[in-house]
Length: 256
Image (cartoon, rainbow, N blue to C red; front, top):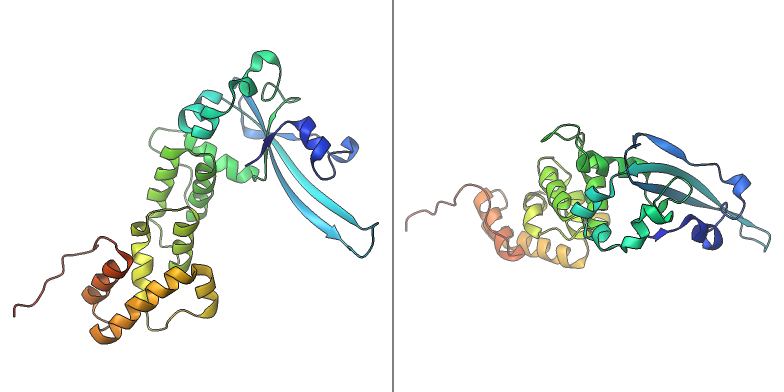
């Protein structure tokens, strides 16, 4: 995440910042512009569009969607190591600098306002113990920002909540890898890929990476002997190859 001042963005960022007439004034978020708040953030998502590139006169256009949020900085400092460690001068509203008002917001680049709103659902719940996040995609958005900004408790919460959803096995392992979640969290996904009839195809292999593909292949090779249709054997092989704790009901061994 990049945090810059508006003036720095205008000096160094891509168009349309250099020409203020082409950069409409950002709107305030309907729900999370809290008048009693003490920190103003400009959440900015940008999409670069290349026009041509066949000559020096070809243009690169930047579509910008900016949204102003006004929140209590204490909540962010309490939950986030990133904001806790941010220089206090950046958040000192008495000095009239970044974060003090709409004209001097703390700029948060490359974040969708809708995703930032989902993070705020958790930071500022409408009722204790309830969450407006209802879908896996909601919680993935929360996990992404919580990881980037070191909201440790919220990251752990989002990982826990995502465990309740039936996420596609490939996608779940991708999430585990991208956000460096413990492999144990993706137990069900490893189990599903090792026990299904068909092996991984090329596209799936590329998504999972070499190490995971090798481990899945090793499990499947073992099960060629032990039987992929025997749930206990699948679980045991997955646990051994991926070095995971055995999940599910205890494995009952037949007496010799």
